[in-house]
Length: 408
Image (cartoon, rainbow, N blue to C red):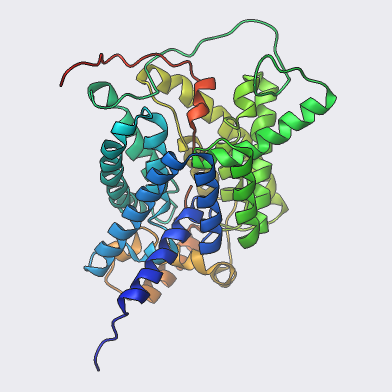
C-alpha cells in the first residue's frame, strides 16, 4: 500500500500549528490559539525583540521536525510544540540583553538561529539524562548563559550585563511598590502597585514588561486552562509578597522581577500536569513559590560577578526539587493517563528519554514509563517554561562593557 504524503499546504498548516503551540508551552499549555495571543502580546511590547523570539521559535521547531522525520529518535514531541518554547525564549533573551542597534539585528538573528538549534539538541539530551523528570526551561538557560557569558570577548556585540557586585543599599525600607521613586503612594497606590507587580510578573516569563502583554498572556492561558492561569497569577503575587517581606527594591517588585520564577513554580507543582492535584499539592505549590524567590536572589548574588542573571533557572531548580521529592505524586496510572493527552506525549516522546534508549513502539514505551513512574511514586512529563526583560536594569546597575570598541 502506497504511503500517504501530506500536501505542501497541509505540511505548512501542521508547522504553523506546532509553532503556535510552542509559544504557549512556555506556560505549560499546548494551544495554537493561546500561542497566537501570546505572540501578539510580545509584538505589542517590543517588535524587534518579538521578531528574534519568533525566529528562534520557528527555527527550533523546524529543526526538531527535520530531525524527527529523518529518523532521529526523541523528537516526537515537536507536534505538541515541545521543541519550540526554549527556542522562543533563547531568541527573546539574546535580543533583550544585547545592545539594540539596527546594524546588529542581522548578526543577532544569526546567533539566535545557532542557539535555537542548539537548544533543541540540549533539550533532547537533558530529557534523556533526567527522565522521567521534566527538563523545563533548562535548555534555554544553558544556551543563553553560554552566549551572554562570552560577550565580553565578542567585539561585535555589546551586552547590557557586566560583571559587578550587587550593591547593598542602606536606609529605610520602602514598602510602596511603584514605577519611579518620585511617585507618591496612598492607600490605593499600594493596592494598584501590587496588582501591576502581579501582572508584570506573569509578563516577565516572556522577558517582557507591559501591563497589556501580561493581561494578554493571562487571557491566553484562561482560554486553555483556567487552573494554570490562576496558579501563575497566584505564584506571581506570592513572589511580590516575599519581596515586600524581605525588603526588596520596590521598583524591581513593580516590574515583576520578583514574581516570574515563582509563577512558573506554582503552576508546575500545583497544576496536576506532573503529579496529583489537590489542596495539599496547592499548599506545596505555594511553598515552592516562596522558596523560588530565595533561590532566585541567591543565584543573582553568585552570578552578578560573572555578568549574568539567573533567568528561569531558579524555577527549574525549585520545581525539580519539589516534584522529585514525591510531594505531588500520582499513584494511579489510569488517572494520570486520562488527565492529559499532552502528559502522555511528554512521557513517551517529549524531548528524548524513552524513545532514545528503546526501540519498542511508542505505546509500549509510554506504558513502561508510566509503570516506572508508578513504581517510583512520581509522575513526570517533560514540560517547560521562563525570564527577564530589558527593565532588569532596575535590579542590576549596569556598567559599560569592558571590551572597548574599535576597528575589527
